[in-house]
Length: 211
Image: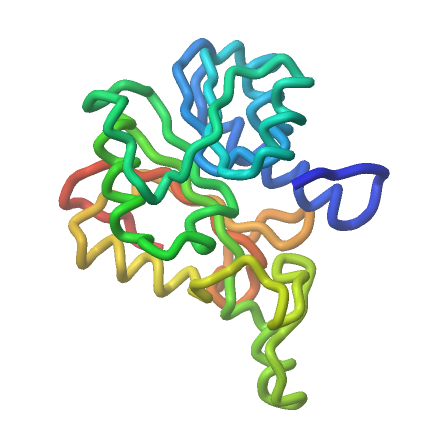
C-alpha cells in the first residue's frame, strides 16, 4: 500500500503501523510477507532498528522497496518459505496480506514455523457498518478498511475478528495479544462489532488469550 497526504486512510494506516511497531522489540529480526511498497518495513528498520527483510510478488512494489533502501525479494509466499529455517526470524508479519492469499492455512503455518512470533493484521468483515450495508443495502460492503468494490478487491477471504479467534483456538495457535482499531482509535469493548481492523500477535502453542 502506498499512502500520501493526510487522508483518513493515511491516518488509519499510520495508526495500524504504530500498533504493529509497538509489538516488535527493538533490534529484532523481521520478515514482512506481502510487504507492498515497504512503508511499514521502512518504519521498523528506522524507528525500531530491526534487521528487516520483505517479500512481495509485485515487481512494482519491489522497486519501491529498493528505492527505500530495503532488503527485499520478489517471491510468491504461497509457494512456501523453504529457504528459511525454523525460527529464523523473531517476527514474521502478515499485515493486510493473509486475507489475500489462496492457501491461507499453508501460509500461516509457514509463518509460524519461520518466526518465533507472527503478527497478523486484517480488516474485520463483521464491523457494524459492513453489517448495516449488507442488511439495508443488500450489497457487498465498502468501508475504510474494505475500500474495494467486489469486482476489484484483492481480498479472497472475508473474515471477522471472532472468526480468527476461533480459527486460532481450533488450530492450537496461541494469541499472545491483540489490538483492535477503528480509524485512529483503539477499540476495547465489543471489537468484533466496533473495530475495523484486528492486529494479532501469535505464536505456536495451545493457549489462546480470551478476546
